[in-house]
Length: 433
Image 1 (cartoon, rainbow, N blue to C red):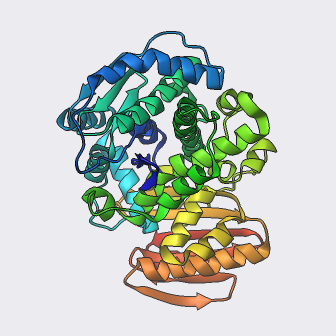
Image 2 (spheres, rainbow, N blue to C red; image 1 turned 180 degrees about the horizontal axis):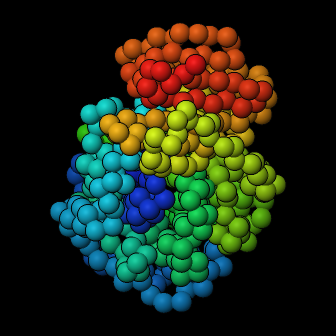
Image 3 (cartoon, one colour; image 1 turned 30 degrees about the vertical axis):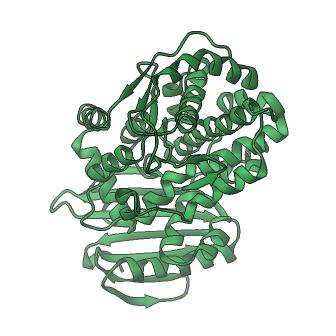
C-alpha cells in the first residue's frame, strides 16, 4: 500500500505468469481492469452523485490522451457479494477445471505456491478483497464496489476505470490483450500497458484538476514502486498470499506506471496510442522501456527433449520472461541476486507434460542468457531453487556443466551449454543416463 497526500492506492491480483492462454485471457477480463483503492477505517457512505462527473472526466482524459470520446460509459455501484458472485460465475462459465488444474500444477512444479494451495479460491478471495472498482469491456460498463470510502478515493477509482473505458473505445481491450497469441509473457506486458496507462492518467488527471500539469511527478513514481514490499494485516488474503502472487499483483501498476511515464517522456502525447498500436512483446520491455523503444527482440529457445516423450501427453507450454525469472530467483535466493541475474535474460520457455500412465508430471524448461557468466550464475541459483523447494535433494553427479539427481518430483537433470540452461524435473528413476 502507498500513500501520496490524501490519495491512497492499492493494487489487485493479476493473471498468473504461466497460465494457459485461455485461462490467462479470462482472468485478464476478471482482474486486469480492476482499480483498487484503500478503504479507510472511518469514511462516509458511497456518493452516487459522483457519476454525474463521468462526462467531465472523460473529456479531460480525452484532452490528455488524444483519444476520442465515442459514447458515454454507464456506471453503477455493486456490493461485495455481487462482485464475488460475478467472479465465481465467470470462472465457472469460462474456465475449464482442467485449465485451473494445469495452472496450479505448473506453479507448484516451479515451487512458487505450496502443494496444498487452492489457486481458484485464492484468486477469487484476492480480487474480492482488493477490488474497489472495475470496468467490464464485454458490457462496456463501469462498476464501483459499494463500500465506505471518501469522495477523493471514489473519484480516483472512477478516473482509473474511465481511463480503461476510453482506451477500450479506441482499441478494444479484449482484442488487445489477445494480440500476441499464445505468448503469456507478452500478455502480461500488455496488461501492464493497460494498468500502467490508467494509473498514470489517474495521477495526471488529479494533478491537472488541482491546477498542476497533467503528468506524474517523481514522488508518485517512487511511492508506487515502494508498494512492492508493503502488505497490511487489514487484508488477510493479501498478507497470506505467496510471494509470487503478492509480487505479481503489483507488477502491472508499479512497473506499468513507470513504463508509461518513460514512453510519455520520450514520445509526448502520442505515447498513449503508441503502446496500444505497437504493444511491448515481453515483460523485459516493460521493465526496460529503452528495449521497447529500440524494438529489441530475442528468439525463443526450444525446451529440452524429455526421454521417452511419446509416453507423455503435453499439458501446457509457455514463455518464461524476465519478470518470471526475477520472481523465481527472488523467492529462493535474494532480491539483489534476482535483479542481477534476471537482467541478463534473453529468452525462456517451459513445457509441462504428464505421463499417460499414472499422470506423473514432468517440467522441462530452457532459458537463454546474455553471457556464459550469467548462464553459470543462473545454473548455480537454480540448483539452490531445487534444494529449497524440495524436502529431498539428492545429487548423483555434478560435472559443473551438468547436475543430475533425485528430488521430491523424481529424477532431475540441470544442464548448461554456453548461454543456454535447461532443466527437466519429475522423470522416473531409470530415465537419466
